[in-house]
Image 1: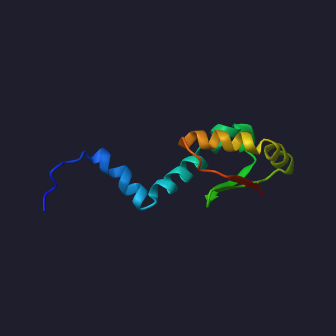
Image 2: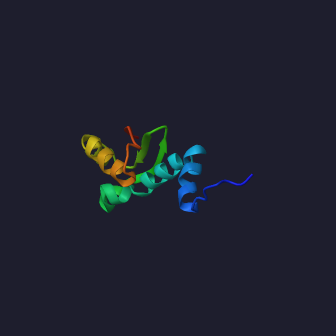
Image 3: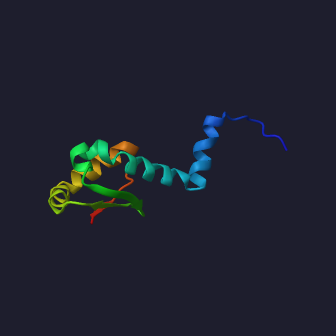
Length: 96
């Protein structure tokens, strides 16, 4: 059966991404990839790994001093990371 109204592919893709929950993974990837841009290259050099799971950003650090500094700026970092996606992607950050 043919639809009466044709849609452009740019109108269809966002719906498919949302339906398959791929949009969430893309946002999480954008946040993890934007880590260095948000905290800077100096702090990023102390980062061992960064990943997102269920709205929580997990950051494994090699320096306890850097971990303490970033912990004090947790809310500012969350706001900047959420700014990368345009909506609330990260609810919390766990520094390890």
